[in-house]
Length: 115
Image 1: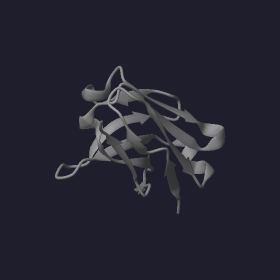
Image 2 (image 1 turned 45 degrees about the vertical axis):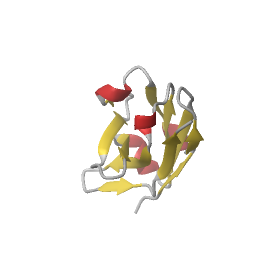
Image 3 (image 1 turned 180 degrees about the vertical axis):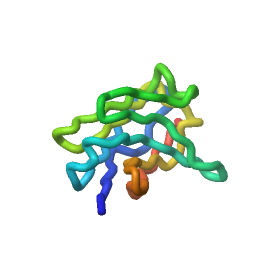
Image 4 (image 1 turned 120 degrees about the horizontal axis):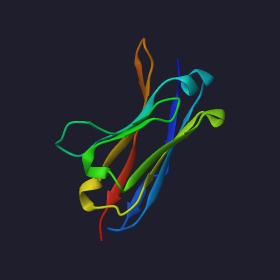
């Protein structure tokens, strides 16, 4: 079992920034891909960004140039730096660990972008 603990969500005005963090409970998380998903009310969960253990990243088009995913394998932590936030970024953000046997998910953290 692997626990993923997220932090960093909150309420921010349009144009503002937030940084999400996700800490994994086991070292195994350091050698597999991790990512951030989000789910807005009434919508399906979507992949926002992912990163391999080697640092290769992938982003959904709507966040390219605004969000940056990174990881610190020594700390078993993945980050999502979110800049120039828009109201449409409002959602619950979930951390994901992609193991060959199964996926693990964090509990989710709410991000609300509103004036």
